[in-house]
Image 1 (cartoon, helix red, strand yellow):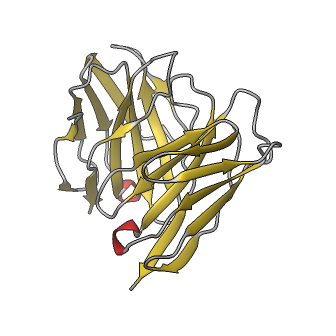
Image 2: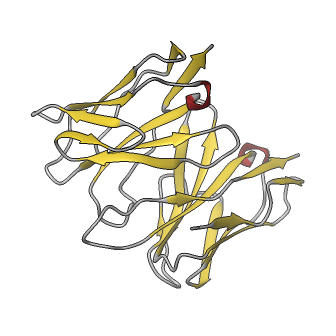
Length: 115
Length: 111
C-alpha cells in the first residue's frame, strides 16, 4: 500500500522558533509537494520538488523554505514561526509518468499551532 | 492556470444521487479535469479524472460536455460516509504542480 507519512500529527510552537516538518514517501516518486490548508481557502501550494535537490516556489512561499536531500524525504522549514502560519500542513507525492495521470498521494497532515 | 468555480456546500440524503458541477471557462486544450475527495482529518485522495465525454469508475462518474467549460461529478446513492469536501482541479498532466485546489464543495449527507 502506498504511503506518505508526516513526522507529527499535531505540533505547538512559539513565535520565532524554527520549525521543521518532515515528509517521507515510500513510492519512489519523483515529485513532492507541500501545501497548507486553511478554512475556506482550500489547499495552497507552498513549494514543490521534482527531483532531489530541486525545488520550485508555489503560490505562497514567503516565510518558508524546503529541503530535499534524498528522493524519499521532503522537509518544510519555517525559519521563524509566526502566528499567521498556524495551519494544517499537507505533504503529497506523485510520479512522473507520461503515459498516465500523475495522481498526488497525500499524507495525513500536520496541524501546527504557533503561539 | 484554469480557475474553477464550484458550490461551497451541498446537502443530500442517504440513497440519493448527488451531482456537483464545476465551472472552468478558461480550460486549456491540454488540461485534464480531476476530482479529489477529502475526509475530515485526512489528506485529499484522487477520485476520478477525465478529458472529455464521460468517465466512470467504481466510485463516481464524471460528465464533461463538448465545450469542456464545465464538468459534473456524479455520486450514485450516497451514504453517510460520503460526507466530505470535493475538489475540482483543472490542469495539464505535467508534474502535478499545475493543479490548483480551490475551496472545494462541502457535501453533507443526512440520514
